[in-house]
Image (cartoon, rainbow, N blue to C red):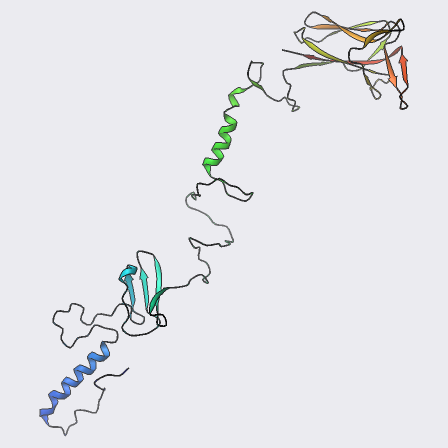
Length: 290
């Protein structure tokens, strides 16, 4: 950088006339001011100036802090002038090539979490307060959910919780029983397998407290029911023969199983041949309707 007054430390000489000393003093002042003015406010006439010898904002490594719109334009064309925009909370540097303030690129810096853009964050992060999520509902398996979203799902269930009952009630939903069945109000009675012969009657007390029942009869020639046939109220007359079994309701707590006079049941072979049986084992299952 050229200056009007060159820095000269060889003058004044001891042989100079004393009348030239004032000229040397003036030259010295000008030389100092020119050099100070590179990064400071230095004036030949300081009257009317309140920033005398203050650093020029944005010059070289001198930091300027203020609103982006108030950033100065450095008078010395040097890269490296730094400024911080308090209104944007962003760092800028002065770019000589474009003669403009450009945002400092910090994307390559590690350990910084940015307020925008995609990032992968590793490690355990502990929050001192509960993070606030966007107001949108999750749409992917890995999306975080908001309290309001969870509450809405629970409310949808809770709305019907008062309608789930353990005892029969019109317009209510029955609870599942321990076995997970949807029919806990269908009181069940099971006789288990017992031996039967034709032309007989077998009484059972079910204590279901109702005459509204649905029953199903199984017949088998094995005591464990391994080859069971469902008869389902089969008690018919064919060729003057009385076959099968039926159930007679006796009050609200008992029934009577009656076998046919000629056969009490039948079996079906793998070839589809039906064989009438005069004895065997029966199992009666009763569903009591409330």
